[in-house]
Length: 395
Image 1 (spheres, helix red, strand yellow):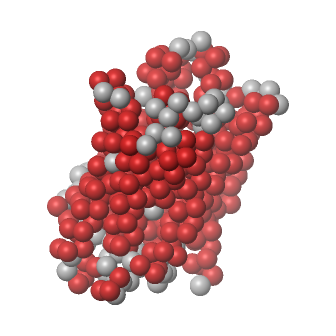
Image 2 (image 1 turned 45 degrees about the vertical axis):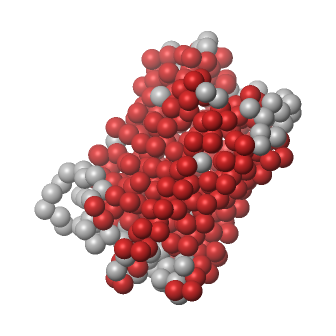
């Protein structure tokens, strides 16, 4: 019992490390843009280095998880992640920023995939859902990093000192948390290569693709939507993103309670419906109150889908825990990487309202796929969810 509690605290700390590190970097992007004299187009091109680094190491992470325990990879990723965060604050040339961002994204991938594999391992020690709380902690860390970044700007602390201080603090936290994490012996499979999701996991990958496409769109375009489609005042432009982030955090912290009551499949089904209604409402009625309410519904909808899908994929009978999560994550992150830029092309050809209206269709995709998964599941497959299968009356 004590070991279970220590493992839960340890993985929660690594989720905090991931969230705080990423939001710390994001909070100082304008300062680095000004320091390197980048216009918006140049900055956008440079920022692509981060997701490319993430995607480049997806296969590597999957292979490493077949050879080593996920907690060792998680700890190594955390050290590299915070090391690269510290480097980012001291770049003086554009090429240096590109290389540092690529390595930052690669190390973040090592940390995040292995961290999610650990969270699935901790979940298996409980007979109730506890996994969405980890992602709620990531959101809290994100708020904390953004608030700290605002203070650093106000106090005129340079990005170098800011990033170095956070990096050192997070490394110390990693050393403190690592001993309590789970040692997960790698599965002894006959192959040592990365694999895409097999047929049994493909629907999980497509659900991840759909929800992470919506997440990426909200991160990149919610503020611009309030500015150009809603035509909100300057003081209200950021309100849409804030409402979305708050709703996501609330959804993640309350998600386990709802999952334990309704079941995983029902939770994901209604999450897809909320995403569909929320984005469609924002597209059809672009007013501050209605669009804000739509973004709130979207935030609640996307909040728990990824951790629950990872939890189900981690119980695959055809692939080991870590490689299964890495395979599903690869498909999901393709949506996070590829779909938000497409929004710009759709908006240019038609409008942002059209783009957000089309994005609402991903909510229907999520709902249909989870219904197909539930309908086609055999009795043993149902038990692979994060919690015991819910009574028939709940689904």
